[in-house]
Length: 296
Image (cartoon, rainbow, N blue to C red; front, side):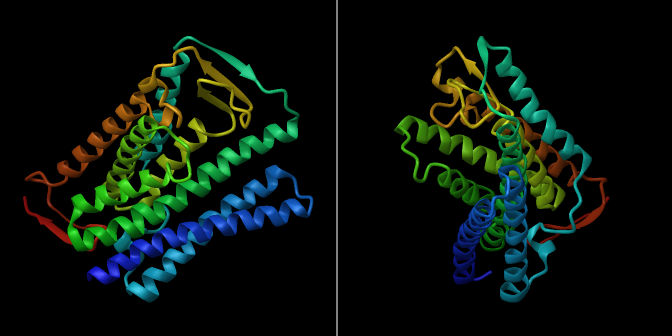
């Protein structure tokens, strides 16, 4: 891929993210103005976000780059069982760790409609919408455009750093919190990239990303140092240890979460390398369209 086209793809990826986000907000605002319940327009917003992102990426790949979607790790939607299991185990283990720490449960006095709105926001906006959209753009379009120009290491790292950066833009975080978010955001981006690369599919990383969001930042039970007013209930930690709580961003950027990202990343690397061992003959095409051969 030529440098100009790669730079264009980076710009287009961010533009698609913004466009899909604006479309999502517009649809939800219109439905809200029409008197539609919040839980229902959250569902609609999540689908609009994900579907529009997919259509934009498909249009750009086929019409502008003139490449098949499979070249960008976007095959038909199929999820490998091992990554579906990982999607549940990773946030579950992190959650259990924190629930074992000293703290207290606090429930917000909410009516059923508000509780339902919080839960659907977590499932369909943070889970389905953000999970699918961000994986299509960062681990699909963007990662593979960089791979085609500068190779796999750059393709894994560069979009992950950009992904982390977007999580601190507009936030009034301290320097220490920004640094911790950059480390955690980059590591989780690397994890998602390796998952997508291992199975040649963004749908694997999308399910891990989406379920993580649903459980960790969804509207059910939120873990942190204070009550979350946008959650049905909160588990308020007694500890104020910066590395353990994740600072101002929360437990997603904590050292516990980072360890989880590293463990899953190492497992993905092991799976990728295992396929290249002598005696395991195969012919596979990478997400970037490069073909690797191994003979027994």
